[in-house]
Image 1: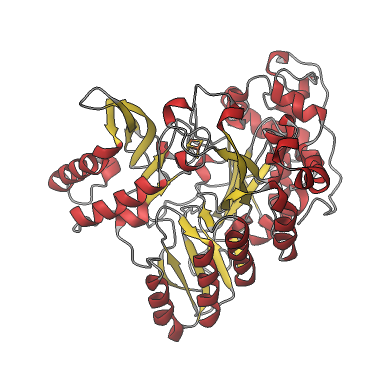
Image 2: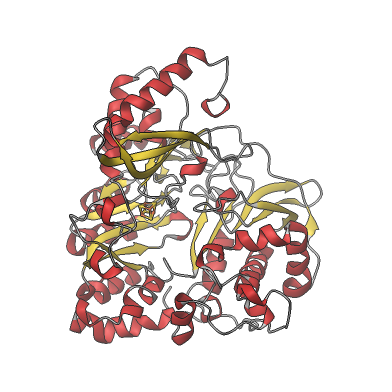
Length: 555
Ligand code: SF4
């Protein structure tokens, strides 16, 4: 879909007078921007930067880019400047943005529902090799990110991606970001309901639609009818989770107001049951509330979770029903407790139609263009034309005939893509980190990959599902607060008194129906060099003392 896709007419934001003027909500008539970000959005819609990229910046080069576009509106098309190489983490908070900016970009391809054909994956791989120095990371939001993108190449990259139905539209920015979806929607044997139609219809209605292109901040969403709760629904602004209503059958339970980063908050249930065909309407209602009532004065209070914290779920549902849907929602039950702890679909699984899907684990989400192209070829040569990305930085090949499963698995393993990975390979995620991210303080991807290898060597007997999430700064791109072991990058003091790269440790977080945040272990900071020793010690202690069936998070 591109910006030329037709959109359904949407009601303009409400303009009522009210008491909470101080938070900058449009719904109470607060249309004067209260900070620089709001001013940039008011001056010109982020979506409009595309024309300038195509007709001016791609011809006149990096240095001709208006700073308000460079560090603001270009995000509406998935573009961030990347970090200049060689700047250490100690300088992150000290240098001005222009000193941190490289002349290259990160470009995020949105993959709603993680749905890709092998033809699309082949193009993603080709673009990586031709324009991104081979880079391609699978993110924990089912996207694929390139690095080293030159502004001169962006129009051609868009042309190639859009020719196969992919886009970077609103992959970043204060917009409806990628809609997460169960990667096994429509094929899993244990599925409660297939949410594919809802993901596609929501995309059609809101992505690239100027009615929703100026939100207070980013808006994260998810739809899954899998009993594994495989889209981290607890930490999205809105999520629709499969559930069977005792009278009305399969449909979705609605969650709102989740989010990590500062002031992390698990989403709350509205207690409402929504059938598949009504999901897009409810989505539009929730994103409309966020646009109109969301706080815009302070960026760090501009996510939906802050409004929900003030309103509570009951009032939120009332406003949704009365002002946006103009009807009552049906009450419904919560989703059932998932039976498995891994939610990533790694391994070989039978589909509804008797064929198989094969999930596999790269190292900390890092692949490359050549590997993506090989995955597409491998899938096709074994009878598949569909692949998926997962919200756990993994991938899946769908529709594999039974007699092709074994050779496919062998082919994936030969590419170092593990179908039966160790718990460490399977459970370790890392954000982008200092290699490319301007906010980073420490290195993460290479550190994570080395950690996996080290733990596999030191603890081959470890058999428990375990998540180790590594962030390069206090933000939460790799979901540290909800990991068994969450590692927040910062500078720490080593034994010799030097400031070196290290991590603040959080232990015992979880997602699922026991969702909760890990506790920050007071004063516990570990240097990057000591990371493997520290985790080995913790895990050996756990192995030695765990009671029967006691999970790491419960220990
Ligand atoms: Fe960058 Fe920090 Fe996010 Fe990692 S957690 S990608 S370092 S902003």
